[in-house]
Length: 362
Image (cartoon, rainbow, N blue to C red):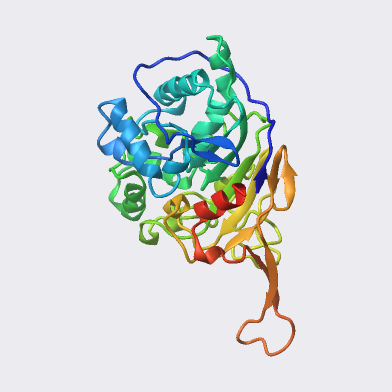
């Protein structure tokens, strides 16, 4: 992936304010010549032990990205998961967006990297930051593209179940409760689920869904999390937390097995259960069959990455992962060329975050 300049920033909302120093990053850290902003995902500890200060929120945000992206970013948008997207989270995000604008960090366009629920938070920020900032006479952020790792913008069935259990904690729901507790870290109770409310599939898919001009590049995994106990409760394939329909950017919450109708998560060319359509400007660029939800952050190797939307220019972003097609016969196939596959060569020798970074940074 090579990056060029020039995508316009977005839409509307309210001016909100917080106090304090909300923003940290490594000086002069860039990707393809552009400053990077990080937006982390759901932090279950915020539900069981709500942060007492924004400094705690910042520390958790830094720790979340420490494996790979922290040293490669100029700023973060940190937020507390015991809040709601249109409430406390918006207030926290606005203050940090305001400081990013004041410091001029996106004057030459920024790249946003999100993980999990950070996808949903970012979608809300992109829909509102221009009016937030213009209301104070500040320059809206210029965003070139986002890189969404295991994006939860379409919600997850685990959140639906969490709300269900919160209102019906019957003994026969024990298996569901264990899956929900693995996801949330708590025994769900009404009023104590914070952003999990926004992660319900219907709620997420009705939040800040207006199209905008910023390409959203999606990385999708199909591995396990929490020992696999959550997988039976998520529609279609998933990474243990986020369903493929969400991570791909599918327009409906139907269970699907791939981001493509003609390519499996493992890279085999064949008819498969893919999305009926994708949200505007959402592009699944990589699928990695064995990759877990947290492994997107730079902690897992040994998985073959599969290019999906590739060798194209999206807005002013050139997507050009290396690729190799080959044929492979199953052990029982005694003749013929076998099945056709595609992969990013050598991708099993690195992690997905490193692969994306090195490709963009060429």
